[in-house]
Length: 167
Image 1: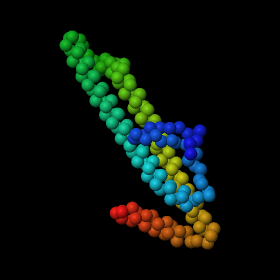
Image 2: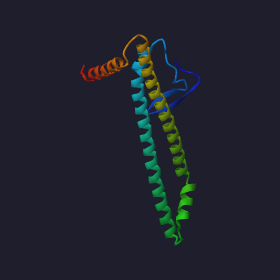
Image 3: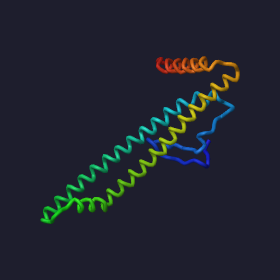
Image 4: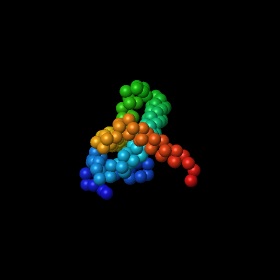
């Protein structure tokens, strides 16, 4: 359900809508909230890792382009028998349009990564809140906190075993 207070971001050929209301908990369906929290955490962590990889690829492309352009500039100046200083090379690289474009791409990728890490952190916090909420609800109904923890761990283990079972 799209919200007006969110924004969209393209990540790994998918459009992700990030909303500011991550802290909302569906109190009418806590079971689904608790079940979804773990999966959402993993999903956001994967998206964040993919974005971090894009940053590293962009950083590599930028460094490679800078090195190639610096080398080309030095060779060009030496053919003309002109003196070349590191300050001149740096100035040339700073003003190069292609490198400026790559730096802007890098800035955008780093922004996306920061947003994804913030969202991933919020999702993980929501998962912890839901787990604590489920324990508190269980205690209100007389359940032992350790028994609840054991039951949650058993449920997670059972779910993992069922995921590994070939269909």
